[in-house]
Structures are given as structure tokens and as C-alpha cells.
Image (cartoon, rainbow, N blue to C red; front, side, top):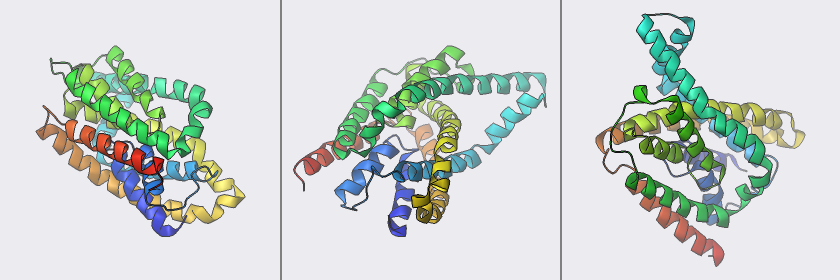
Length: 278
């Protein structure tokens, strides 16, 4: 992988991880369409993507630092009793929402790993992601609720929706947002909860995969480029988060529809081009 390809991956990852269009699906499909000649089944590709995810998580952490600081203060018992209770409840919901991904990911990681390198399958799942986003808008709960009123049961449901992203082409943020919409949250609140819950999931994946990139002898040459790319992904992720939070606030009645149409068209076009070797 060249340095230019690594940086292009970084921009792609930093944007598509937050936008509900599937970062992994794009990472598999786009290089195949552009004939980059990168072996995505190599032992270094998945750890490299996880490095980009780590940079993305740091960008998200910086954007929501006030929220994480508030939860830390709640854990330490700092502040008014009502605020401490609220922050602890939010942290508990985030932990509950993360548990399904940790458990299910541990169970199915190996069975679905071979799908990560198949552009044709990823293209089909991009179409499936479009269907999920369309369905999310159609079946969303009508009684709008803030993230503060979401229950532990709501958090668990959202966590299970997030697990759909183990299929390459299904967006983690998109699936989580759809779960939030189904439980009655608005787009902005659902997106914020999805972004917050995604941070520990991404960090956990990094803890598992980054050491492989550091210690594997054949991957040493990639580590420098991966580090620069991770920083770039973090910058793009921060900017993407800022844009999306404003976007979801201003377009609550139909916010997911443009992304659904985009995934449907990209998935269908990609599948056709890849199938016929164009």
C-alpha cells in the first residue's frame, strides 16, 4: 500500500464511519472499483483499518469531550446530586448498548471475516444498508424523546441494531441511529447516542488489532503510513461529526433518506461494474 493510498483510505474512513454509509463497505468496494491493486485479504489490511478507526475514535472523543468529561465527573461524584445521577445513568446506558457488540463480535468475528475482502458481497450489503435506512425512516417512533429519557431497555435494543454492522456494507452509525429512531429519539439525539456508544467499541477493536500491526515483522513498513493516516482520519472524523450534528438537527423529518439513496445507487452500480469486471 502506497502512502497516497493510505491517506485516501484515511479520508474515506474518517467520513464514512460517521456518515451512515458504512466505512468498511467503502474500504472494500472503492479500492476494487478504482483498481488500486491492494490485497485486502493480507494480514495487515484489517489491522490497518483498525488504526484508522482508532484515529476516528479520537476525533469523536475530542468533539464530545464535554459529554465524556461530564460522565467522568458523574462517576467521581462531582457536582450536584441530580447531575451526577443523570451522568451515571447515561454512562450505564452506553455500557449496556456496547455489550451486544462485544459479545456478538467475539462469537462471529471469524465466521464473517472472509466477507471483509469480498467487494461483491460488500456492494450487496450497501444496498441492504440503504433498505435499513429507508425502513428506519418509515418505522421511526413518533413520540420524540431526548437521550436523557431513553431507558436501559432502549439502550440494549440500540446495541443490538449496532451489531448489524458486523456485515461489511452495513453502517454502524446508521444501524444505531435507526435503532434510536425506532425507540422514539429524534435524528440528532439518536446520532449523538450512536456516536458516543461507537467510541468505546472502536477503541476496544483497536486494543485487539493494533498490537498485531506493531509486532508482526512483515507489517513494520506499513506502521508509519498507518499512523499518519490515523491522524488524518481523526481530523476528518471531527469535521464530519460537526457537520452531521448540525445536519441532523436541521433535517429531522427525512435526514437518512439522502444517505439511503446514495447507498442504493453506489451498491447497485458497484455490484454491476464488479460483476462484469468493468
